[in-house]
Amino acid sequence: MPTKRIDYIDVAKGLCMVLVVWQHTHTYYMDLETGEFWLESFRMPLFFLVSGMFFKMYGGFREFIHKKFNSIIVPFLFFYLIFSVLVPNLLYFCGYDGLRQASNLGWRSLFNCIFEKTYSNSPVWFLLALFWINLIFYGICAISKKTKGTIQMIVVVALSVVCGLCGFYLGVNRVFVWANIDNALTACPFYCVGYLLNKTELITSPPKLKFLILVIIGGILFTLFFSHGLSFKQNKWDGNDLFSLYSCGVIGSLSVIALSKVVEKFRLLKYYGENTLLILCMQMPVIQVVNLVVKKIGMGQMGEFLLTFSVVMLAFCLIIPFMNKYLPWFVGKKSLI
Image (cartoon, rainbow, N blue to C red):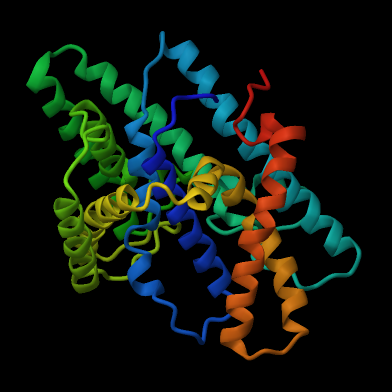
């Protein structure tokens, strides 16, 4: 939906979206070393943190649900039904056996998003988790309203931490919760950090360049040293992942945001950041098509990887304006309902 935009936040989202496409392109070239082990520690936490910066309760729960349904669930259903149900089944019916992550086909594919952690066009799991975390955080804020001032913030933080620990230990014990609710619980502390940054008005304050550089260098060194290479999508953790998950997630995210303040005039990253939902939901089909073509060129793995990644990112410069103009309801630009 139309909102007041903050340039460096869009740059941060755009930068992180570039890293997500980098990751998913890498899945076709697993023998290459591309820094995945380090980058995984803050990619998805950054999206949850930034989402928390713009949390609002609006005029009440009814208006809140209406807005979240239009901005999250409508795009999710559109991209899920097309790229995880319709397209895989059509390809399978036509005899194509190159499907990736198509765990169920036929009528059962309609329910993969509920019962499966992995399905075709899997990046849209984030939208489901984002919807649930908005509902959870709405409940947290509604409870905290019974208090005032500093106590209210303490209640918000405490309840967010409790939710995060619940999600984390569900993952430690390999307890799967339908429709990515467990991911949403685990991400609550990141969402809360973004919410607190907004409340303290740090997102609009102009810090000095020296401070930003210190945060960037410190964040890089910290995540390089403590990162365990954690993948958020499956919500599977070991008991000793707790510190790495939350410390690297928060500190790595803050370092990306600091970097984005330094390069906030980078217009292409800002453009990607303004359209992260579309890139998130369409990247896997685009990568697969581009990769099929690039593989025929034969440039060696590193050459093919870099060419695939570059072509995919440039392709979105054409896809984004088309979707925004002709299908704005499905990319969060207009309300369908």
